[in-house]
Image (cartoon, rainbow, N blue to C red):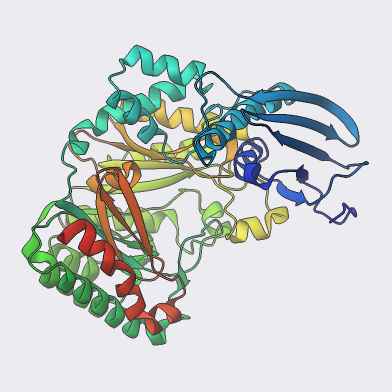
Length: 509
């Protein structure tokens, strides 16, 4: 494949001589070039246009040697020769340990190179994983002090001071919840892959419910069948359910009748195992909420709901395809309060297309005026499967520095208002290379959200696109459900079979 000039204008072209190093290279490039397409060649080129990097890898008995050349519009920005070896390296019989360590060393070195070339320090340094709090919790488990953990983050991973303190605060808030993890404590996830409309930035398994109205009933029947069949596999297993999380999509896009059937079945199938801490439903879209549905949620003992505007600027809501107004959000929130819901999460997004810092601050202040128990601040991510990625040239993306200012404003305002950060995660192609953080009033932490991020608890998951996660003694196995709704209905027995061996090995045996 040669560069013919037909690649998109905002691309970075890359040649890597050893495919084993593509993933870790891609992680760093995505951090420095979040909105660009990264195009990989199978041969080097002589006259590159735009950003171009060639990476040659040579393997010897004891190490890997790298030569990286980086160009912009044909002018060389730097040639770097380095070796991924250190005293802690050792070669196991298959060479896997050396390969893993070399990948990490390459990633750290590429971060240093691009940081120098672009004269830019990323807030998370060379940390590219989606679960930074899990990494910090593992450092604490080694007996490290706060000072030692902070030093590790700053010196080894090049994380800046603010992010180091943020992730350490998240880890501290999680400690009591993580103590409850164990083989017999599990959680459930139930996926409803329907929404009133599909948002511009969305990459989840979500389908416009009006288009799929004719098979919603069949989907609910299949979902119930999958839950009942999986529960039968447990037999008399000594299991305790710590939390149930019904997400999507938007579960409240279901009609009141289907919502009643679903929640009634969840209670009848899983009630005997107890629901110790949390029963959550994402009522995420304000245009999907009404008094009748809220009463149904209350009837079945839902303890936590999400009501998510993402922004309180109506022009942005229209742009991103939300099809509701800020006024509808306030109405839905007050209705939920009036129906007795005393644990409400609200989501907002920093860096929505066309939004300024002042527009973000307007949303933040408006949500804080409601005093929700949780407020989750997402950073705009250009997700591969989203319409925003597909049509990115049609939208004005917020500059990374402005997004960072938004996120810092949220942290300052929320912590000053008595909220603590309690879980976080990161995604590829996030503007500003930032993070998603959920803040809580003390005592209102979401158990499910902490466990799903820290991967310390088995989670049985049901529905199209759902992923079950089986955890035992540090070993994690996953069972995936197909994403397509029609395929999920057609292959329901296969979805159950995918769980079967893990249920026996991790929960029953």
